[in-house]
Length: 552
Image 1 (cartoon, rainbow, N blue to C red):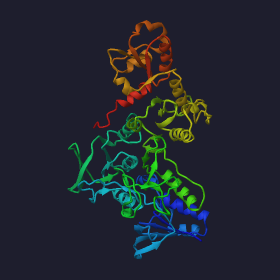
Image 2: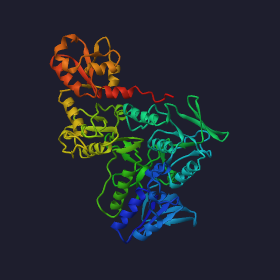
Image 3: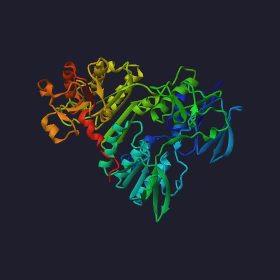
Image 4: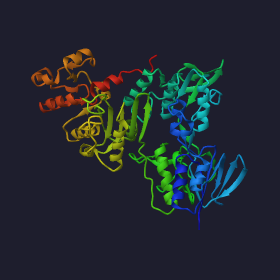
């Protein structure tokens, strides 16, 4: 007997499930409900339409109700909100702009309600000058205000993906922009020593930053939105964009008996089944497993949602399929920088007490002798057995392809030693004979085999100056241009002849520009009986840590 499948919500997860299911089962009756007029659109492209990088609004529309019917014979009912589900009768209650309230039966129900912008219980957040960005209609509202030149100034609250993209695109439209973030860094998936690079990029492009200062409320006064912060500081702007985060849009499931996680996410198994018979869930509203830690988590990204939509269709059609975990692989453009990451960061590993090693490197994006090469900021976290826990890379080109390689090796169970053996594409315009990913493997392998011992700058700052030496092994000219206060300079090429200038009873922390010369120095010192650490990332990393994001 043909199945009647109801899908609540479109966009990534729901629309993918509907189209895949039709390709697998021509006889199924498929009905999709969407609360507004757009069932399948490029929500990740919304900020770029506001910034006019994506000039044509129509480019954001992937499928319309009519196109879904013409090609897939899917009954799309937009402006229809599913307000309740009744598993005992296998029905849902629908609030329709056209039909009013009615009941619809199902054989199989797929929930893809997505996530809604988070609005904390603070005064003034529903004001006329306060915006959020989730839908095409939200985009139209913001863009109309910018196009009409009514807005000259903006405050963006939140330093995550949407906040960063909105800050950039509003700045590109000529607005004066201030970004407010309660944490002491932007982009929470990144560690602070990497995120500081993105903060500097925002600052260098004229975005003012207020980090470590939470939103306290908003008040409209004299045709302006006055934003009050926890510090007592007030900011006036023509518009405020809230990008604080998202919450699962699962309020309509209260009382249904469906199991929800501690933050309201739908609990599913590997086949994306809920605890209710014949009810499945996908997308931003579900709870998933973290690929690295195995913890329950929620990672609202388009890639996982699309994969889940395909998998749930397979399961409904009787094919094998499972969704095991999410790595959180993601990338964001911040003006001229690209930043990408995968897996766990230091904050997560520290919270869970998982032992790990940090390495940082700064290889060129392609052969340094070929014009246009720029340096990358690379960070990798790995365990004592060589397990890759996570990677973060920031730069101007070649960033996301390196993180994609790390994500692939992680997914396939590879270790840091596998990175050394990868045979990756090389020609001078695109890479180097030793790719930056290979370099990460070489450095990690040296650590695991005892050929190198690394320290971060954060660990170095905590050293006891009475029992340690900070050694700069760069050239005299480099040292005289600038150096870390208190550092002794012995260039690596003079080190063997000047070992007697160093006290063997003290621990040596040594650095060069990026870590390569310092590794040579480490090998010299270690083999001559010194207790030594190579400061990973070298001077290049140190200089980025000196930036004050809250400077005026």
